[in-house]
Image (cartoon, rainbow, N blue to C red; front, side, top):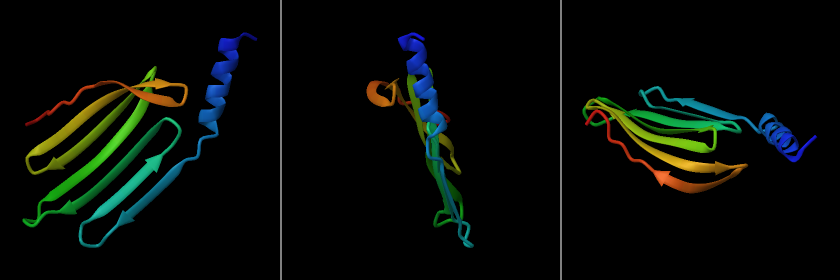
Length: 107
């Protein structure tokens, strides 16, 4: 076996053995929260009603694709979906900022 093959096997083994976390809360007044985290992705989201009774959702999700980690932080309300996207360079379990792209969609 060469070094690249061994590294790939070790990286996949680390992902397979990653701890998976999940939690959820559903509150009777319309509020909720949930989260999950695994070796390569995660999502956290909360929802509540504003003072006018409109639903407001805030959250973040992230995932690794190739050598990049994509992080999307968002708010969704009566005016639409408002994401901000950050792209990080991903190196074998270490992350460092490579570039940041902030997008305001559906303004």
